[in-house]
Image (cartoon, rainbow, N blue to C red; front, side, top):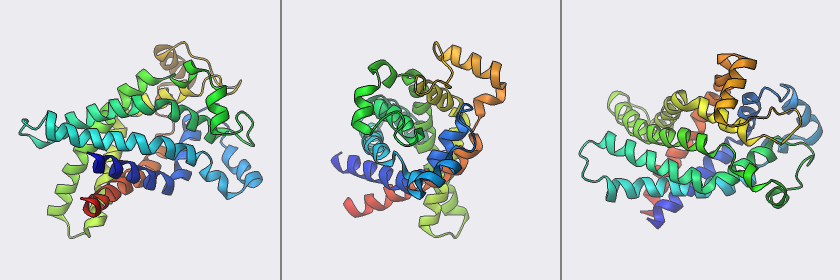
Length: 267
């Protein structure tokens, strides 16, 4: 299991680092209270390195999250659901359980990363440690319930869809094996997020409460949904979905490719 943890952690760090600018763009597009010109204006002031702002903190979150996610996934497949003959069902159940456990263990880091990536010129926090000291414990876990409701099925669908798409592409195309893994992983990510996207948006909104005076205040999940629909219309629940597609396809594709490659090297 140790190898699975290392494989999962490293594959997550590699994929998130390569696609960090797309993640920043996605976060901005998900939040109506952040002006569209923010990234462009800040780039002029802080330079290209702004696109990777908060990535160090993100990697601190991603490594344990993807390590736990993949490690628990493999453990569940081999020891908890090994008697289930249908492989797709086994992948679905293992992915769901691993997703819920991994997001719960690493959620405070996700909140800190989201806030650090959106601030400019250290306007709120001087760094990771300052954010840990400054953000109230209650705020660190805002949106956790919604995150579990979203990430557990996202993880379940991602793993199950990946192996399904990979098998299909291997039998119906003459593509290079690495291309098949990237495309299969990207398609799996798109499939999963299409089903679970509103939960990710609501979780992000709840995380960023008390971050800025312009951020709306929500009493909870239902209040957040109600205010989004009232102020932005039903489409507001899917705000930033296109940006998420653009970010997620290469991120999940690279992650599954790295995962398979690392497995070959370490096992």
